[in-house]
Image (cartoon, rainbow over the protein chains, first blue to last red):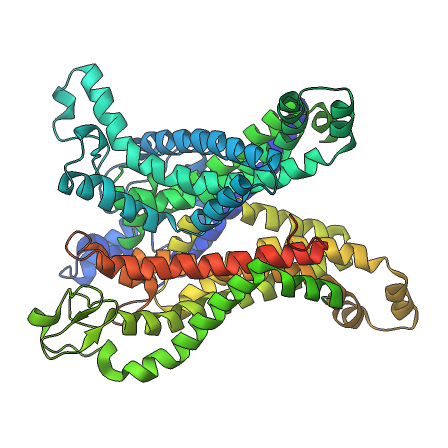
Length: 330
Length: 287
């Protein structure tokens, strides 16, 4: 078990290396001069050349790559060109809010998706099943940035317009209110939760719709298996058959699905963080891309890929815990 | 390719009917709409009097605006239909690009096996672990944002599912007797793959292609929404949503109309893909 996880970790390393290499090569092939951006258009040629030399951007690409990779692996991620701060600090500040947002969203969307999918499969071809399918199909096709805007319109603006109670009014910008650091811990937590509500809701709705569609298919398949017929023939209650026998088996592919859903979640987070001005990795990446902040973009892409790889490993581990058959395979 | 029976199943499938109908209507509207509206899409006349008109409102001189107007007094429906051309074109071409890359890589991997196969599978798995939007942002921002780079970037980041599906199919078709017969007759490997194996392996890629079109449309709109895709004044649904975001409170329809358009088209392609998948699996719409 431990050996297979270690083996998987080794297999996952080239993925991160590939991302780093593609990012590095692409960034340096692209038009747009970071030195000019750094100094502004008024700088003279001599200053530009001096800065280029100081930043090491005048060396051959291979040398730059090797030097950069060596530094990157040892934790020196350079300095943000736009913010004049170490990249590790820029991303370190952003990682926490993103993990909070994605972690909560992942948990909630899985819980909701599994519940919906299981109910649908158990009541297959009923009106409830058809209704949930219609809703999840529509929501699955709804882009996260559209849903986010709609939620802002209803819960941040409409709630005030239509005089909804204060509980139903949610802030649409940032992770905290201005001056939240002066609140007492309880009030500060409540403030943070209220700021989390709309971004998390956006990611949960889109994620749960996809998960429900998948769980329904997986459950329908499981309910067709002979062991389910055997359980029913034994006279077990339908609830036990569905929850203990079918759902447990249907969950294995669902857990493995995390590996495919994480990239989608991190894609959604880019839009959601941008719209809600959430101070996380997605927003930092968009700003860095718009400002050609090379070191930040490269490191952010690598961190995203690493998070996906780690998530995959966790999912594999969880699948092995749930299903003994998986343990021997790898 | 698809045999007669799945084709019949597809014809009876309500999802295929609804999705197909929606797509045909939108393509027709996108084709004739801009011709009918002509200059209205770019024309700015009496901006102050005619901007942010609500849906179904008339201008002072009596022109009806079915979906209302934007902040420059331009007719939203006219721009929506012009934007449909851009969105549909990006979606279709991006899906075709991913389909080509995926089919070639998947077929080569599945047919040759060995080290080549292992290398392609490794690259595919690695590519699958990269979150698409951050990577797309990177690709698009590296070069000047615009139509060609958007299509190329979407194509280059969407081929993995196709490659996996095709590889699996090719591996199973490869062992069939007629392939062996073709090889025994001395047909060159590339020709065996292209003429004898691939036609039998392409069907599942159809599902991925249909899903790919919807996905690409959604992502193009997303990139344009962030200001990194199609650039104004060329209308695309994404940059229309972004422009409408500024007047979300004052005139929500400016953002909602293109947003709904994206949702409807993506749903239509997803429905079509679902129906195709059931038809190929021989289940019809029973499930």
